[in-house]
Each structure stands twice: as structure tokens, then as C-alpha cells.
Image: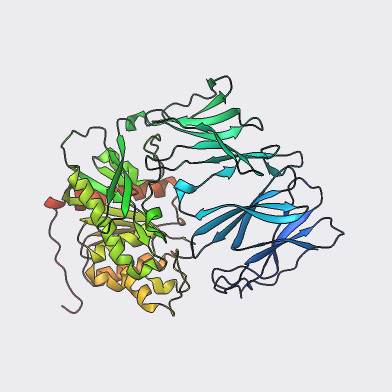
Length: 507
């Protein structure tokens, strides 16, 4: 027996258990175990030079010994064939990642790189792994060289890559990268040097297929021949759109146009987004995703609006910038939305009177807030969201303060508290069995009651037996039908809609 852990009901918010945790075998060794112990009582708010220490047990009948201490919280390790490891740390408050080389004999920890967790441009990638004879995952290794693959984020979008990296000299060599106009990522490596690869290749018009590549011979051979699963959706166009918000923060998103769109034709537009928090405004503005990927829609995706004559502005950036960015959450949200609306109008794609806003989970929270605090959108669809932050009083998303520490922030961010200001039609959809701790079904029910109490135009749809996402065919089709019907009435045909008489309680 290595550990008997008591009930973890006293773990600090955002913290970890005290005592040993994260036990794992040391990659290639037969009977060596390593684990982690907190040096800060598991409390992320405690100021300390080191957060965790790593303890090694060389053999099951030996004595444990400390081999390293981490500056930030331990978040995992990738083991090499020689018993060394790439060790990962994460500082949630600073949104910062550190990667170091861990040596066991002699014990030592050497920093390899560190960067913002959201800095895709600086991300050097993760090691390629294989399964050894013991069934354990180890890094693909050629002497001191390992292979790193990543998404290759850039201002032009993602271009996946494969690098060779020397653990001793830190020398790096790029041996593969997706060509312009394509999206090709490494699915597997077939030798230790990364010469022979299996890649997944796709373009805007070509569905993903697997290929064999021999880098030395220049050979490229198709391994699969998957055809377009939904040819009736082809003809849809896609482009990466970049722009700025009022304070100069750069933004971007993917704009999709339906197959029958004619140049100069203005369409009803669905803006579908999800807010994210960033400490650094330069990171907030980085381009994410690729305009070269094949478009595939499934489930209750908002992308099906493209089949109904809508344009879809998918994932326009909604950054909330600053270490305590939630202090100005609503202001920044409206700035982001204003910039997105201005862009699609300026491009000649939309007119301001036929734009709807939608989102899922934190995107639903965003939707209700934008309807409460702006008049940018004609209507909204909010799925599986949270709307009263006093029901998540010990923090949410990247908010680390409790309700009692920052009640004014929780109040200002809660659309429930501003339900009387939501004067655009809103559709609320929620799984009746949502067990996500931040989005219990009561959130949608209570917002609906508040809206109806103020005479708002609102509809609540509870999907039986569904959790945070929707799985049953009946639920998926129901959600799609509700979404399309709602925006058809309140966005596409908004100019024909009957005005809604707003009544107040007691009148």
C-alpha cells in the first residue's frame, strides 16, 4: 500500500490534495515509481518559491527520495527511453506553462522553455510518443533527439509541423510542415528520426485522408480514400477574417457563406462565439484555427444555419483581457461584439437589422449578457448556460475570487441580475440532466422565469435525459429545429415580425 487518502473535502479552491498524488511508473524502468507532493499545502494562493516536489521510489522495497522541485504546479510528464522526462508545470493565475528536462541519475531539473498557455505562436509542440514493450508510453527518441509536433499557429492560421529537438544542446530542426493552402498534421511517426510519417491531409475542398510520407525519398502515398460524407453541403465558402476592436486589440474569426451566395448580397448572419480570458492583449489577438480545413458539421451545430440561407461568423474572438479582466467583462464583451458586427457589415455580408448572437455554455452566458447590455443583435440563442453567478460562488472559468470577495463582479456579470434589460427575443435550450457543476438546469429555468416576469419574448426548451451536450438523435434534431425556427422568425424575417407588447408585473 502506497497511500491511503482521506476525503478531499478540505482541498483549497483551485488547489490540490496534500500528501502524495499523481503516482506513475517511471517510463522504461521495471519497478520505479514517482509521485508529487505539494509544498504549499495545496493552496495556490500561498506565496512560496516552489509549489511541488517529485519523489522517486527506485524499487518497491527501497526508500523514497526527492528528485526535483517545481516553480509552478506539476501538470504531467512525458518519459524518455533513458528514464529522463519532459516535465510540465502550469500556473493557472498567470496562465503560464513551463517545460523542463527531468533527470533522475543524477537528479536535476533544467528549464527548456516557458510561455503563456494561450501563446500559440510560441508553442514549441509536444513530444511524439510510442508504446514500449511494457505497454507504457515513451517519447520517440533517437539518442539525444526527440520529435515535437504542434499546430504551428501563425497570423495566417495553423500550419502543423514536426521538429527534431536535441535535449542536450537545445538544437532544433524543422523536418515537416503543412504547405500553404493545406492542413496536414502528423498522425504517427514510423521511425525514430521522423523520416517516415503517417499524416492526415485536408483542404477546404478535400476531406481528411491518411497518407504515408517518406521524407528522404519524397514519396507520398494515399492510405485511405474517404469521400465527402455530405456532398450536399459543398459550395460553402470560408475565409479567415481579421479586424480590431475599439482599443486596438486585434481580433479574428472564420466567416462562412452559403453555397448560393451572390457577391454583394447581404444575408442574415449568425454570430456564434465563446469568451476567453487572457492576461496579455497580444496573445488575445492571435489567430486561431485554419481557413484551410475541410468543413464538417455534426450534431446540433450552429453551422447548419448555412443550409438555411444564413452566413455564419464562427468563433469571432471574444477576449477578456487583464489579470482581473472580469472587472470590465461586460465592457470588453460589448467592444468585441461591436467590432464583429461592424466587420461583417463593412464587408457587405450583413445588414445591422438581421444579425443574431448565439453560444453554448460560457457562450450562452455571453449571449445573455450581450442582449442585456447592448442593442447589437436582433435575437439570441443560449444553450446550456449559467446566468446567475451567485449560484457558482467559489469561482468560474478563470475567475478565482469568491462571491464574498468580489460580490460586485458577480452581480455585474450575471445576466439574471439584468433580466429587465433583455429586450430582444432569446431562446434558452438546456439538457434536463446537465451535471456540469457550473451550468445546472436551474440556471436556465430561473432566467426564463425572470424574463417572462418582465414580459420579455423568451422560450425555454428542456431536453429530457441530456447532459451538457446533446447526444440523442431526437434531441439533436429538436435543438436544430428550435434554433432555425427561432432565428427565421426573429432574425431572417425580423422586419416582418409582429411587435411584442411588453407588460410589467402589476400592470
